[in-house]
Length: 394
Ligand SMILES: Cc1cc2nc3c(=O)[nH]c(=O)nc-3n(C[C@H](O)[C@H](O)[C@H](O)COP(=O)(O)OP(=O)(O)OC[C@H]3O[C@@H](n4cnc5c(N)ncnc54)[C@H](O)[C@@H]3O)c2cc1C
Image 1: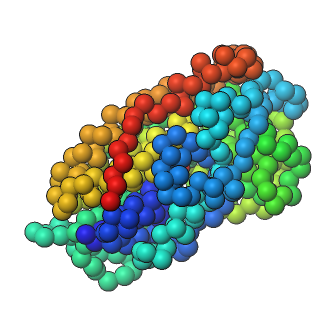
Image 2: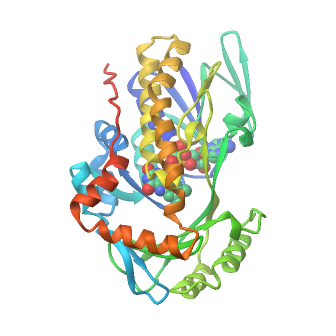
Image 3: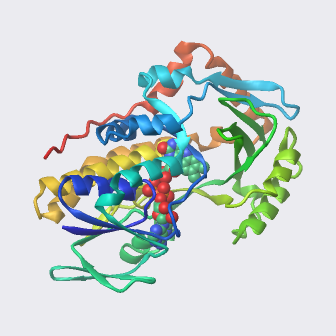
């Protein structure tokens, strides 16, 4: 089959890789002019890790990853107020855990498929017209083409989902927070392999030192602090972050000053996508487009990879019977991913507590996590993937 995939993030290239393994032809369409570089760091383990291993990509991912040693919560004067040793992640996953830039995983997977599939950069699927034997796909720039199937792997704000399933508002569950991220070079201080974080009510700012003298900053803030006007460019994003975090202690003034030299500031709502179907006619969704779990799940990358793997595998097993494959894809994964979404939504208030008391309690709870037994009990459940995926074979 010939399959158009909108989005070359995580789910898109993974799907293209597995489709090629099973003898299908994929065309990736990516809105950005080239693969996105930089950006935020994701924790990577579980299903995604296992599948990346089947693809022979784990050593490259680990090479670019970081083995974070500690999550440290600090007060407004930088004194340690809570946190935990991240050994629990290693213990619970038998060392199969790393933290790595999202864009590095994307590039590693894309490199592994680039010579077996066409990627159209700087374009987007803009029209989908199903006819008896296939789909005619219109693009923003390229001429129309015919495909057997179309997959939306174009993230939280999926265009394919809007075209085939309906407007985003119908499916978006906003979790009450916003997130921003950027990186700069030369920031001091650095605390190697420590994720350092400071909270004020409804606000959280964190930093993580990376290779090549770079530092990643992550801001999370509750909706009550937001102006309500989504910023349209980096200048407006800077202005919004300055307004919201301007009065916050710790290194915030210095971080906001460093932001002046940052380009490509990520800024979005913390939302999930909850749909009743991941497929419709000849169109399927995968990754955040289908079922964004949000950063609060800490597993969206792995789930995007798992969805791509299962979708390609079920298409392979079903021979040309794509409706059967689509049904199996949904039944196998939708209930599991919904449980992950529900867990993540519950976690929202402890991630960036909205009151001083909430911050105090969170800090105490994380101190208790220094006891390995407590840490394993508290985090173990979230790290477990209670699902077995099939081997789809030749
Ligand atoms: C701050 C933050 C922290 C996170 N932390 C973690 C974590 O610790 N662990 C974890 O596993 N996950 C984490 N996630 C979630 C993870 O990043 C996503 O779940 C994952 O990237 C989903 O992959 P995807 O391929 O579905 O979408 P994306 O990675 O978003 O890729 C979508 C691609 O589609 C492209 N695109 C968008 N619109 C169009 C269009 N119209 N036409 C063509 N292309 C288009 C985009 O440019 C992009 O390349 C985090 C997310 C955020 C925001």
